[in-house]
Image (cartoon, one colour):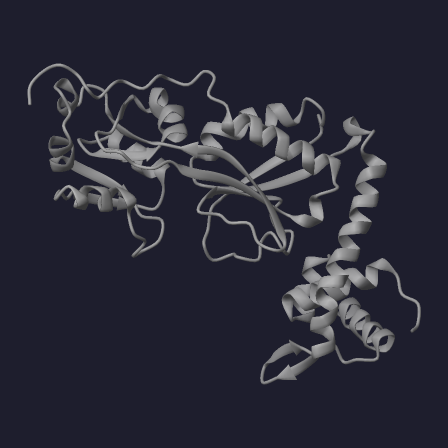
Length: 313
């Protein structure tokens, strides 16, 4: 086989990931003619067409599919060698890390995470993207460094860490009349609610627990994330039920009172997931350590107001 360099492998990885010469060129910052030339060289080196026409699209050959994972591993090993060489020069690393997390995490945790990151990497920067359910290949294709959220799972290409087991807390505007007396499950269920529905049709553990007691909530507003639910609760008579870290983190800024809901719910794990290509990258490991400490800590957050008050029914 003829000789080739890592740039050719990077081009091959981009072509296999995108199935498009134009998109691959954008991904590795080449012109489209330069990527076309790289594809011609790749075909010559491997003795295979790599991408072939299928209607208006380009699809990989069987040989190209077999090459995809070994190429990714080789590129990851090369990146690890570079990262290892730079590991002792922390102040010089101007890395930009991209973290995907539920909306609202940027408000609560963005500045503390950046501050922790810059203890060792003063030139580092952080971009927080809102969680989406459509971009399933973002980790594989290195568009994000870390994915954070509930319901995330580890697979053959990724590693994961459980940051916390999140209990659910109620939140209402300060002075809400419901919290002036003993909060029973029936009174709480009968109130007006704002519900978090990240995906249409997704089952609710909270509603399932109420149904087992023969109760049902009235949901007047459905929003896609906890942050929106807390803002709605702060501006109305609606009650929100969100994970404890978000509730506590936003309570003071929004003028909210957080409380234990009168219903037993199992905690939900919040995971941090990353691609295995970063396993040997010291800078990426430092990012994960900082995020882990910031997102799993509890210091400085407002206390929970007990829901079991003496008073009326």
